[in-house]
Length: 244
Image (cartoon, rainbow, N blue to C red):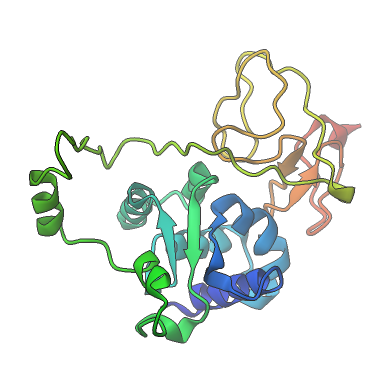
């Protein structure tokens, strides 16, 4: 594994352990990883990246399964990230589309090839390699039970998660107030996808980003709307307050 991706994984494991002792006890969401657990502004010196683009590239590779350190669910999301990495000019921020998807994290880098301890069948199942194409074809050919039907999955279709991204609490644990009702053409400052028209939107329905914040155009730091300068790199913001 690339050293940068390996250091990012170790930082992620340490961040989860500060929440709970058992890293594998439950998954985290993609949004939690880049917004709370290992955001760029926090792990930049530890991981050893200078630019937000380098951080995003490492996170994309980690979520795509490089080194088998984490497992992104569903499998269609992993496949789309792998295809993007194989493209000539990959979109390193593609993982934001899957903000609500679950990620199972291995507790240590040296456990990638080790079998789980005796009795930990659940952990082994979570990280078991995906079935080869031949096995999947045979599984689809055999009915799961009387009257059961298997619906085909389009691997290139956008992945929709039934659960919304978990809201990021503001200081004091309160959920941020909604932004004003959106107009036609309004889009998320993080993923550039369109927002629902005429509704008060707290979080982007596409990437889960808090709509009361915006990214720094220079380094990607998450900023409060109305701030005139970035708290990390000092760059002027792109909003109207910058010219006030």
